[in-house]
Length: 366
Image 1 (cartoon, rainbow, N blue to C red):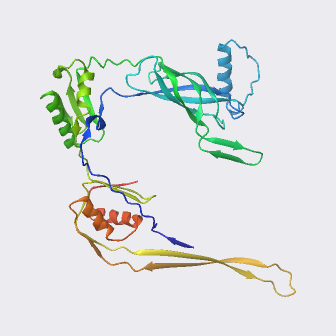
Image 2 (image 1 turned 60 degrees about the vertical axis):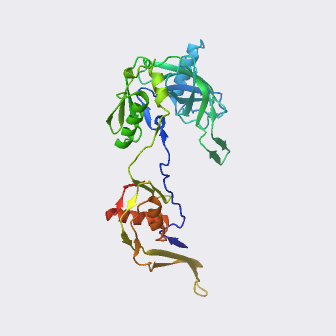
Image 3 (image 1 turned 90 degrees about the vertical axis):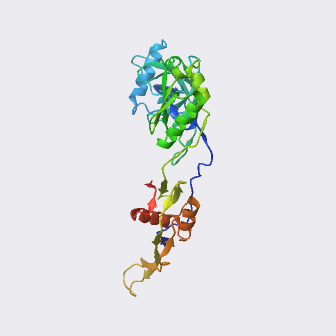
């Protein structure tokens, strides 16, 4: 068996250059225009014997008893032991400007020892926001993404059958109290803060709406004066500016994933002129067996003894290789590829170049 410390699989990627402009709505988040998370606790019924074991999850029995009592069924003192009921958490995201009567998707996840939610039906479940108010009510058939099969001596599970979804499974009952039409000021929050990008967004908006409409507050925020635009509503203003093109800027960055050997470089990465030498270590392990026989006419047993042979070889390296300073990403990549090493070795080389101060970029290791 031969093991090498450098995996031979070569996976090296380069981040594409910002060759064209990007729309403002793909660069920023509009203040107040966001979704709200909802959560609820309910029951999934109709399972084929794959529900909660009520002895281990007594809260499922309590909730089922309360539900039946509300429906007019007296179960006081009854010993309920069904296997087709499961307690679940129901989560959803209420999109911005959702109106009463609209529908949203929900996700259903078992919280007990249920084995599968496949084929189950979620009973009417209220969904609460962070303020404790009910904003939606969910109900419907659960679509589980996994499969579970079990026999007397074995069980096979593929995917996650204890979680599923209900497309358009919740009705919106309450709207978020937000007076969007009455706003006079709005902030644009950059997803990747950068002073140059924020300044360009300010300039493009002022060119479209007039001087003074937008003001850069910091690297991640641009303030928009809606009242100064004279538009009929804030929605009209955002409709005019959200598709304006802006060429973004970002810091030079190198991101490496040591598990997969992936290397991603930004467009602005630069490397100063350096010399690199890289060795190559090989570990060789050979397994064998020796058979030991007992002496003739003696009481004994034949024994097989394993024998291992371990050999560590340090192959000669290629000596010092010069990596010339690159003025573009293609030159940097060409210089590194000239070393002729695998991605995992390349990660170690980049670490050393960064430690030497010759890598002019943010170095991120995952």
